[in-house]
Length: 93
Image (cartoon, rainbow, N blue to C red; front, side):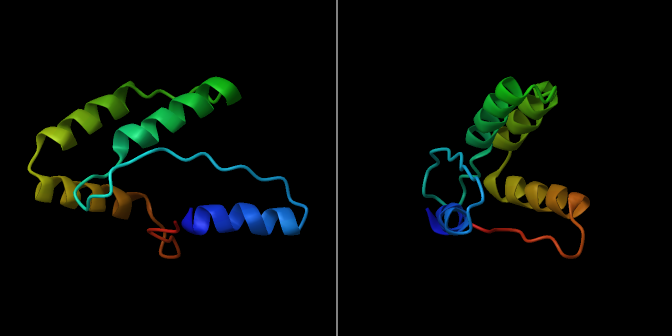
């Protein structure tokens, strides 16, 4: 779907092994898909033995979901800015 599907297709043409994990989300601008993203992290953590600690993420998700939607969006943007370098891309697919 979108760029996610395109990258997998282009990788195949160049004989680069590729896979894509997608999670179902709601097509609504206020829905951030945080729980769906966490589900993917849990699967990757289990299969690849990444030793990720996701309990703090649960707390963050709960706080964001309880807050006013406009505050949640602002909080997510602040978190993104705190972890981005100037060349990061916000959305690719």
